[in-house]
Image (tube, rainbow, N blue to C red):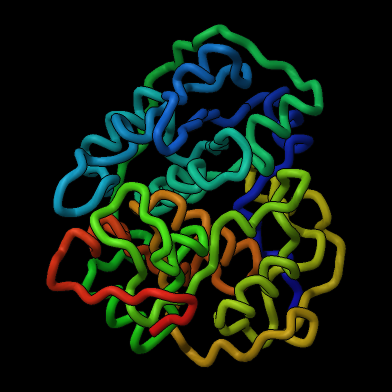
Length: 328
């Protein structure tokens, strides 16, 4: 099965530079953010990609914290207002970047897909990759023409705590946090330490290599196979074809052979559902993205997000908590 119809959710710095010089450049969104600060807006003020609009994770891309978690999904009307102010238009391409590893940019990628806007890519390597290559940056703040995007929520699967518990029992539920948080050895911010019983640890930090760029589809598939995720009999990803172009066609590395289950050492998917959570529903979206880059899931059947994540689960005193390196 050839992969010519599959487009990666990642875009390279080279392809982005080409598209930015074209007649219809993509909308650029800068979403740099760090848990505990300092605010990403300070980084944006010091320099950003030309034309990029800054969006704040806490103020623009999440509802106020509460019982639903630290970063609940924004109300559709609020998200539509934010995206239109940033210049996002129906049918027009969008590229999102964060500081480096895509774990925050993936939140916007996921939100746009959830809202029914498919033409969105995450910049591989983020601002760090762009800067290290000596590409242009600026401190000028753009004033984009208002967009007309319509947010139609529901295009990405979401579950609540009960749904996450069911996934852990009947499918595969991945915990994207660092191993020490998964094991319950440390918990810097949420009420209880540990993980959802039955969840398997698949840290989001494993998505990128030492050079800060995303790993190849084969490497990502191997990572997920080790975490217990079933792999399709024919993976959609290919060894070097991790990038798509901004306009949705195949990007760099599009001429290599398909990866099969023998290449990645996985097993047949067997119809099992895959779900993901993290601390507050942000970095888990990068696992949804990574599963797609790996070819384990696809745009037609993405992994499910437990949006409230550990901040929601751990706030409920009646929810059981597991500790240690094993899922149970």
